[in-house]
Length: 119
Image 1 (spheres, rainbow, N blue to C red):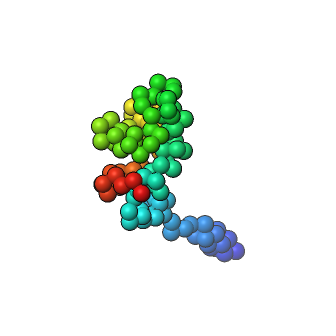
Image 2: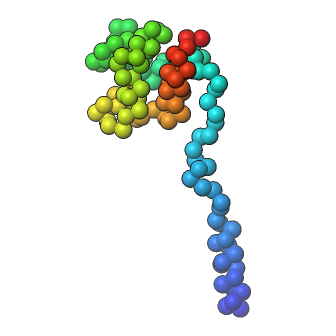
Image 3: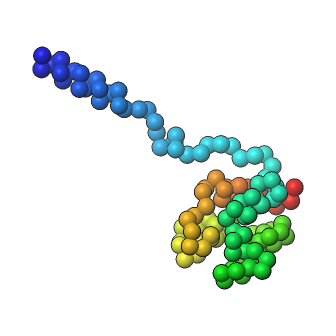
């Protein structure tokens, strides 16, 4: 009887285990083949940056990010990718907020690599 109880408990523990791995938690959705400002980057900026980087900028933001040229310039000359990619809370953008999800950062990086296409 004792052996049957042990086998039942072991069976129940085995049923609770899964084969899920840490890789299952990573968003493996492939990036679109051509990243553009209008389709991919503008929504990221509008949802995460415009509250401070409006026109005119507020809360100490040094520049507006309301137009394609603004964001392109911020990547080329102002270190926008370094700011959104940083792990340093004092340097990270959005300021005072959580770091952007990696998949959004990856879109902005890919946009730069693709040549900063507008649409």
